Image (tube, rainbow, N blue to C red):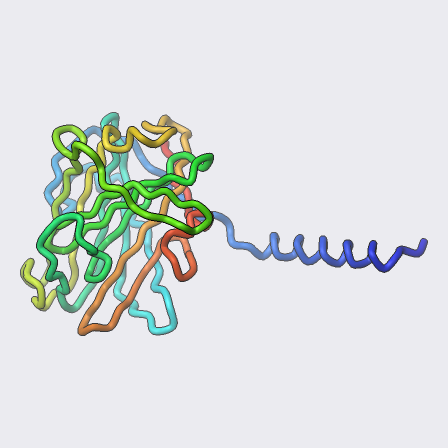
Length: 241
């Protein structure tokens, strides 16, 4: 049976799409274990952290730095816990206020997108000195702008602490690495749907790091995105156990 040129073109197109789908990497997933609430100290010594393994972030770009960067996650009845750690050589963190443009210096970042039906997600950044940037981000076709939380206090306020290994918590200090420990309460995430998570719930998410040793920018991500950290369709998934 002969086919028209148009039909042959369609068949070739479908075959190409099928091949691309087969070659596409599977979505990264991280299983989040439930735990009782515990104190945030900034060093990750709480016993609950021993129950979960580290998840690596991968270097980005053409001039990568192989400084190991990793994350752990837990959740409780009250909120989510994240522990992020990265090897380093020098602390670059001159900003000394919250809600500053922290991504322009050393920083860890957590992006949480609980409900895929709405292009609205939560972004959190923390510097080695412990300054933070919590914002709610609407993202419409790649156009995004963060909004600061209202009444960011009491049970809505994030608990966080940082420590620097092999150096001091001062900008310019030599260091072998730094660690951030974060608790994000569900009360702060109330504007988002699908909160709090239940066993079996899936949230889209990503984790990032920026570092600026001697003015040379380096970055890492958990689920690979392109030039923008806000490519939410490429985020991985948190699966709550």
